[in-house]
Structures are given as structure tokens and as C-alpha cells.
Image 1 (cartoon, rainbow, N blue to C red):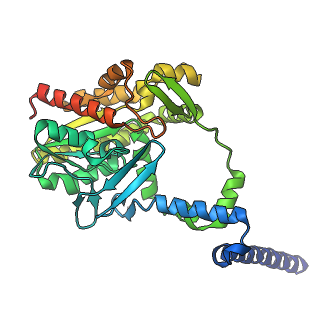
Image 2 (image 1 turned 30 degrees about the vertical axis):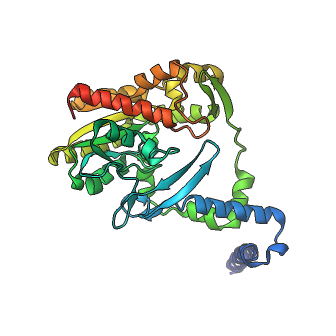
Image 3 (image 1 turned 180 degrees about the vertical axis):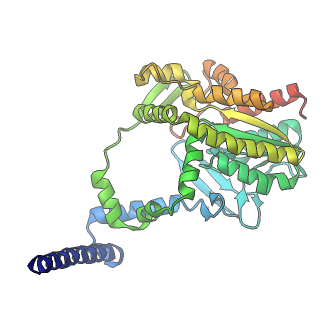
Length: 365
């Protein structure tokens, strides 16, 4: 009986401690949110401003049960970045989603799905490779690209929004980080994104994160023939090592999504073309590897070789943009933004020209 009484008292005390801690944390959150700004210490005010900035930066997207996130219709605002100032506007505004859409008008000849490299991060609508391609061919190409998405979303957008518009050709843009994107889609589909909401709204969560996170080194500037580009050598090394460790599983997951896109296009009588969009690290790898002191066993071309082999096995039209971009880079042309890392105007122009030549060679137009 005595032991049971002691255990009961211990449990009660532990519960009281947790209740007291919860009350203290809630009181702290309430003070940070509702107290007059003059009462709140400066570091806490600055944290609140960073949280608000984080919330605002993500309002470009809204949640979606099928795609995880999407661009809302009638989006129209100016983005200011150290590398550029551009207007992001959705010209194709459907019932519940928006896309950059087309530029020529008329029936869609082509539909392009992909991430920010298809969307045209950092350049105006008319400067994207999709718009330049449409202009050079005289056929409308609808831009269905959405930044930060991956193959699972590309295929769903292709099936739900692009193919019902009855294009003759579907362009499927595959980027260097799409294995990560496919794995992230599967992971987020399985759980509620609690951490995102805490990052937006909890002072305690952000303070704990500040105290426990390891300081990350600032990206270094790498000298290239055409200028400079930022390089987080440690982050790139970890990315490549992770990609190699889980490559087979994540490629199997990714290729199933592409398979589905190929089948849906074929069933709709639409020609499917896959593009491999290389990162700047692949284009400037010899320089990056030397300045970043990477171990010799890091194989940055593994994904590209796998995608090209996949296209040959599936007998689909496929264009690897790496040779074209490398050729132009060797001539000293700046193709990527130095900090942002996406194609600049010249990069989009080179890509559009290479795609046009490929399509003409294959007799697609």
C-alpha cells in the first residue's frame, strides 16, 4: 500500500509539472502574440517578423488534397530577388487553380508540365522557354509548370488539366532534384504537416529550433567564365550522397509516375516528350568539383544517365539539354542566375532553341 501511495504521488507531481510547463508555454505564446509591441523584447519582435515573412513567402501556394499545394487562380504580384524583379501572373485561371498559361492564344498545340524550370522562375512570362518555343514554332504552348513540385504532381497536372485541353504534344520537364521531390510527395501524403504550421505561428517552436539547429555555412561564390555562382559545397555533397544511397528505391518511385504520364498521353493520342533539365552543378561540374573539394566517388551524372537509358528502353522522344547548355557555357555565356540557380533569359533562350531544333529534327511540328 505504501509503495502504491508513493507511486500515485509521483505521478501526480509529474502531471503537475507538465501542466505547469504547458501553462507557462501558452502564457509565453499569448504574451508574444497579444502584448503591446513596446512590451515585447526586440529579439522576440524580430522573430515575429521572420515568421510573418515566412507565412507571406508561402502564400504563393495554397493547399490541395491531390497535389499537396498549387497556385491559386488570379495570382498576380511582383517578386523581388537579388537576381531579378519579375511579375508572376497566372494567365490560365481555371476554377480552382492557376497556371502561367500560354502567350499566343488559340488552341494549344503543346502542353508543358514541370517545376520552376518549366514555370520560368526569375523571368517574365514571354521569356520562358515555353513561350519562346511557341513563338518560334508559331504554335501555342501552355505552361503548366509549378515551382517546387515533382513528378507525382507533373503527372497529375498532365492528366487532370493539360490532356483535357487536347494538345498534340506533351512536354514533361524532369529536373536534377526530382528524386527528392517524388520522395517528399509520398512522405507528405502520409502525414499532417504540423511542423510547417508551428514554423508559421509558434514562437516557442522557432526559439527551440534556433537553439538546437547547427549553424549552416554561407554559400561561397565560385568563379566561372561567365561570372559567379553561389555554392553550398557541403549541402551539395550531402545531397549527392543521399541520392546515391537511396537511388534505386526513389528512381523506381519516380519512374512509375513518368510511366503513368506516358500511358495517359498515349491513351489521349498525344505525343509524349521528356526533357532532362540539368542543374548548374552538372553544367559546371569540373569547376565546382575542383573548388568544392568533393570526393572523387561522387557521381553527379548517375541520374542523367538513368533518365536517358529509361527513354531508350521506353522508346519515347527524349532530349537531354545538358550537351547544349554545356556547349554554350564553354563559350562564356551566363545561363543561370548566380544566387537563385534557375535559368536566366539567355538560359531559357538556349533551351527553347535546342528544343525547337530537336522537334524539327524528329519531325514533330
